Amino acid sequence: MTVEDFCELHEIEQEELVFNEGVFLGNFVEAEAISDVYQLFNFYVSFSYILATHERAIIKAFTNPSQLPMLDDIDISGLI
Image (cartoon, rainbow, N blue to C red):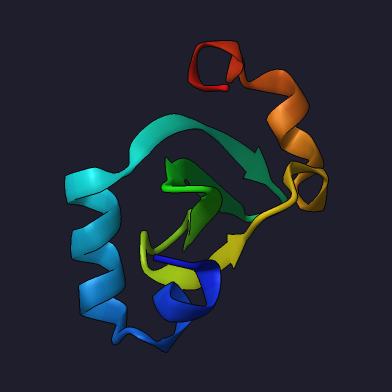
């Protein structure tokens, strides 16, 4: 599956795929949100939640870890 294929899935399908086949890398807090980061196949997915309400705000999929600088704080050496 490519990141493009993933982005075409319905939100529920994205969530199920990440939770069933993704590898949790860690999470970080930024402003008023917390993001959980996963590796899925050859790309990354982050789920961002609003801290006050715990509602999901954004699902972001990307291939370049530099798109999420906070990955510098997460040890992914065992996955590469």
